Length: 144
Image 1 (cartoon, rainbow, N blue to C red):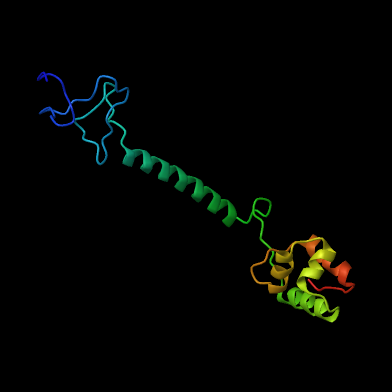
Image 2: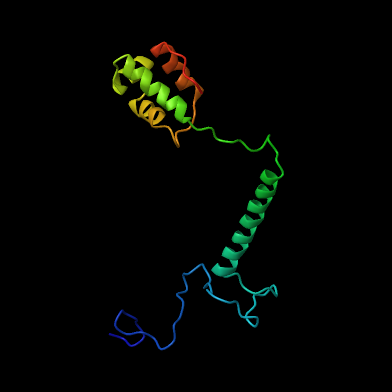
């Protein structure tokens, strides 16, 4: 084997980048002021790019926070949740009609999980269409 050929067992004393690479090395960490590109600006590092993205997202978050704090009702919506009175009324009416959650869901043409979430209440998002359907199927007035 000739001495000028490289393989995985002999490594050169200096680390050389292969000629076929079309990218430049990226420095991670603080940019050295002495190391500049031809433009006179320090090279961009991953940390610098991440810092720029974080500062940009902080500006967007601060802008949206001030917009919501100013009380613009047009831009902010409050999420309505199922009230305890509503969930109790649905459960009571279903039990009075001697229906299971599955049977009520089939009659309302809904999924059983929707009925269960409505009866559970709490963090279930209020959907007036679902409550109206249940109200018409059960034939009772459900308080909201």
